[in-house]
Image (tube, rainbow, N blue to C red; front, side, top):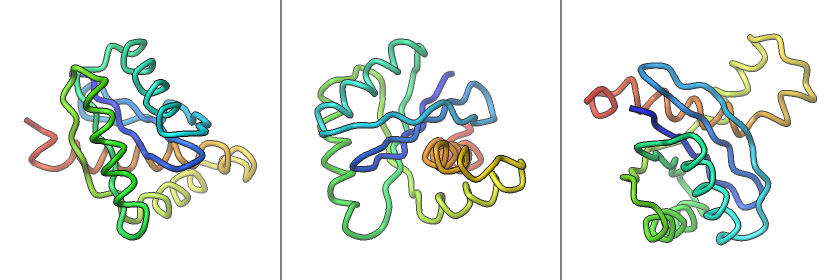
Length: 131
């Protein structure tokens, strides 16, 4: 089953993909509205032939916005959508990028995709993701 991981942000969305037990960063897309974000995610789901989407939900002020994004996304996708805790994924992603030896400029560009990958890998490693 091919699964898409989404790290939603107001200006950028990190996207990761997993086919099997390993999540890989795919890309970062810039967005200027919730509708723009939805259109871009729908396009990636079609291009990648994704069967499930996992959207990271953080703690704090953005959590409500992320939940609203998920509710809106559900209206536009026919694949199942689940949410998953993305707390600390950005910090974990930064560590992984440093350990991978990526230059600082490239790390900044791909940070959200790495965060999506960390969040998706957490989902896959859980009992829920292994079903």
